[in-house]
Amino acid sequence: VTRAVRVELADRAYDIRIGPGLIDRAGAELAPLAGRRRLVPVADETVARLHLPALQASLAAAGLNVSDPLTVPAGEGAKGFDVLEGLLDRLLGLGIDRQTILVALGGGVVGDLVGFAAAVALRGLDFVQVPTTLLAQVDSSVGGKTGINTRHGKNLVGAFHQPVLVLADTGVLDTLPRREVLAGYAEVVKYGLLGDAAFFAWLEANGADVVAGSAEARAEAVAVSCRRKAGIVARDERETGERALLNLGHTFGHALEAAAGFDGRLLHGEAVAIGMVQAFRLSVRLGLCPPADADRVEAHLRALGLPVRPRDRGLSFPVDLLLSHMAKDKKVRDGRMVFVLSRGIGRAFVATDVDPADVAAVLAETA
Ligand SMILES: NC(=O)c1ccc[n+]([C@@H]2O[C@H](COP(=O)([O-])OP(=O)(O)OC[C@H]3O[C@@H](n4cnc5c(N)ncnc54)[C@H](O)[C@@H]3O)[C@@H](O)[C@H]2O)c1
Ligand SMILES: [Zn+2]
Image (cartoon, rainbow, N blue to C red; front, side):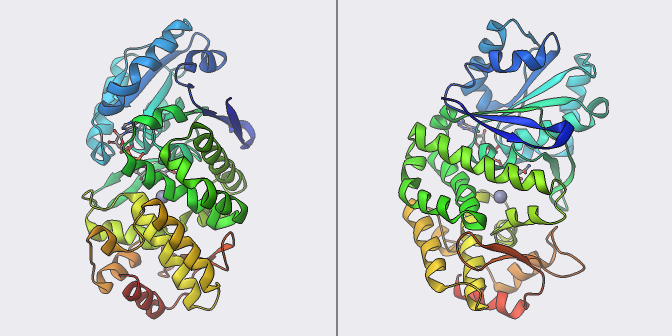
């Protein structure tokens, strides 16, 4: 069965459909939206090899107007000005018009890149997300943040541009390497920790099935995650308030990723797993959160095979280096570091008044 989550954004509201087999049914799913409009699929080379033929076959079988697909290199390197320029050049070379719909088939990299291309090509095209990583299905394909990286940092050039439809085919996760599944799972856990204690308890019981590949458990975890994110995005699309809760674990996590040099030793979700543990430890240190809740968070992530300390990945960073990365984070407000802290599982809030000495102490104790 297909689950559906609606993202309520007035005239830009859209559906996220979730379940196995959606790529095989993509033609039928897209037909009402597409009509005779031209569809241009874009995938990274890895995903193109694995899943593009099924998408093309489905769109063709529905009689839709589909261009030859475009591909970009796999990996974070594709989120740059050079690849964006090449993609826009090829799109314009196809003779696209304002009615053209881009179809982003891939992980967060393809979603962010193609979404940004859709935001700027001809001042804005519709685009459809067909996310193929767990991370993309529960996080990056929902909410309309698109963009690319620059030499000054990740995601520093971009636009808010909502998709018109998201098709999250949970069956494609079967080809995703286990390490990537786990990294996406960290973001699933995040939704429980930030505002849904019952979901976290469900994950304690069912998380191993989600990771191991149970179709039902995966679809349920993706659906609850999307519902959580969709609710937050609908209430605060531009991140002036509540949306910041989605950064739980990310102030620490981004510092760890930056310190590791984005070289693949630490995936984003792995950094977020460590960062969520650190955020809970910081909350305990500040007397806000019961220690038992922090222990539960750590135990669950560890049980599923996620790192909960840098040393679990053989990494070790000087506290000063991590603090300096935090001070440069995009989320710094008026020179103050922003942390998502917790009063317990499911009870996160944003704090801007944390003493750096407490942060340093937590970094040292969780090295
Ligand atoms: N826009 C947002 O709100 C948002 C939120 C979170 C993360 N992001 C961005 O998402 C990106 C990370 O996304 P990601 O983790 O999906 O990385 P990714 O897109 O690079 O995918 C990871 C790897 O898995 C491969 N892959 C994808 N689907 C596969 C499948 N079904 N089977 C086998 N291999 C597959 C890809 O080719 C790639 O090598 C980052 O750039 C991050 O900044 C954006
Ligand atoms: Zn994240």
